[in-house]
Image (cartoon, rainbow over all chains, first blue to last red):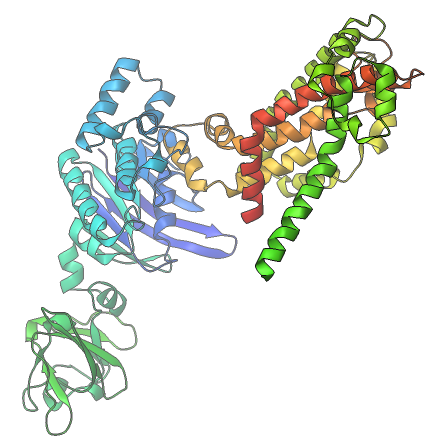
Length: 342
Length: 280
């Protein structure tokens, strides 16, 4: 178990800057999740920590060691890949034991460690099978088994659940969470799935175009996003942003000036009336999801607005639907910079 | 109706091709099992050349061929086996290692090196034979095994086949192995090579055929029986007039059998490799 410190980290591929001035501290035992859209550099950042990519400049520290010039095997890390990366010609047992064999761990100790990992991950009946004869979830468990058996200082996960179906993803997500609680290990996890990020993380790092947009706890990011990108990236459906033109007279009073955007999360919006509504919207269509409706609207400026409503919205006489939210759930951002206005 | 006609036409064509391919092999087997040389000459003008009655089967030709002191067949077979096995086995390791380096390791001039290897595929052996002969003569290797082994270990086409295969192997496998502590050598030896069995089979078959049947080079570099391969011995045997057809065919059968066995041994992998190459 060790902390990870990234200082002024840069990574270029030729003239393309993939990571720009990354500064980040991940505490020992913390579950840190990197999220961001495709191409934001989250996997490159993880691979730079693993030593699978050389950094262009800056430092990577794991524990007290500067590991920039260390090979992956000397960094005390283990990694679970999106594709599982199991060795197809080896049995489950040999896959799990692979790193221990290379490290020339004595046979008895090796057998004990593999047995322990197999027991913990319920892989005991599968030890003699080849990866081709396993289901997706079983393969992922073998990949996790291979990573825990060496007692690394830091666990790295590169989108480990994205190849699984929805139901299995939920199960495996829970298992990874339990694994973290049990091992109390430092884990760094890359995903583009914000539900995984919100449910697993102690700390979320939101990346965009190689830059860290915000670091914080899931609740921080949800309740106090630093900018419009984070505000719209965290939460599903994404946060609605309104300019003053979209707002009613009452809504305009919530803005300090016309250069500010008002943000409302779909799940915090509720149907109101002409007098109390903050926004007046033209309904377009709605999706009935049983428990609630996803109601789609068009704002005065032509933007799509989504609200999660527990009752079907009925337009007023003017054909508009008026929505509101409680004051504490309102977010304000500068229209030009996108930054949060206190 | 059309479908039925097409099926019959296809079947007829397949049978025709099969007959054309099998005819010389049947002629060889049938003739090798006929003990009466006069009967062989009579049969050559008829369909009976492709057939031998069970009652007429004789192993006399094989006995004669195997006991010929002038042309010791077993020695030639041994020579060919040693040469072919050495080239194939060492070649698989050398060529796959080169391909692994080209596809997986980062070093300057890698692209150029690959281009050179690929372009070497088109240079025929005949063009290199004379300068190679001069070099081998200079190092005093004439009439040895190594003169027939060493120059053929590095094989550009095999390198190309391995390279093609390795570039398709997921990088995550290497990365996972490196994270687990493996060295590039362990990744090559423990992962890339075992996973490339279909290519190994293809290379083994293609190279063994090439070496087993090679004629020009052995003719240039061998004189006595010590290192002479069976392909050359057959030509020598056949070239001594008048040809005794029964013996020639028995010799041919014995020469063909080892290659056939190698093919049958690797057939499953060979076909898998060919199919993979076709569908990817």
